[in-house]
Image (cartoon, rainbow, N blue to C red):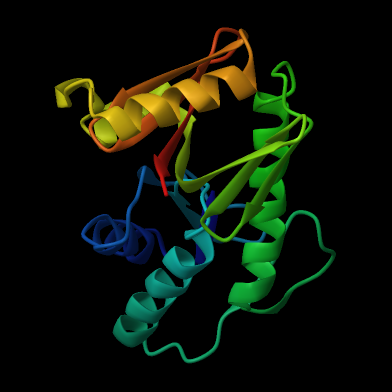
Length: 201
C-alpha cells in the first residue's frame, strides 16, 4: 500500500482519479474521508506485492510529478525511521523482503527446505533438487483469478507442462496443490487463500 499526502481534498480526489487511469497494474485506490493530524488528505494506492512494485511506484511518481510539477519525492517506509529521498532500489529491497517473508510462510508446511526469489527467478529447493520457475505473482486467489482471468484458461495438458507440474508437486509434498492453467503453474495451499502464479522456464 502506498499513500500520497495531499493538502486539499479536491486535489486529493483529482489525484485519485488520475492514478486510477494509470497504465500501472493497480488493485485499488481511495481517498481518506478526513485529513490526518497534520491536515493532509491521503490518497491510498494498493499495488500487487511482486518483484515489479518499485518500478510501479516510480512510474506513478513520474506521471504525477509531470502533472503536478514535482521533481523530487520523499518517502517513508514502515521499517525505516524518518523520511528520505525516493529510491527504487530501497523500496524493492524492503518490499521484496516482505514478499519473501510471505512466500516462506506460504511454503512453511511444504516439503521444501528453502525458497529463493532472485528478481523474477524463483528457486524451490527440497532434498537435493532445485526446481526453477519464473515468478509471476502472489496474492489472494480471488484477486489473481479475476485479474489474470484464470477461470477462463483451459487446463494445460502439454507434456512439458504436465511434467513440470508433477515435478513441482513431488517437491512440494501433499500440503500444496499444483495445477497448470494456460501458461501458468498455480500453486495453492489448503490452509490459506493465497496462491502463487509462476511459469516454467
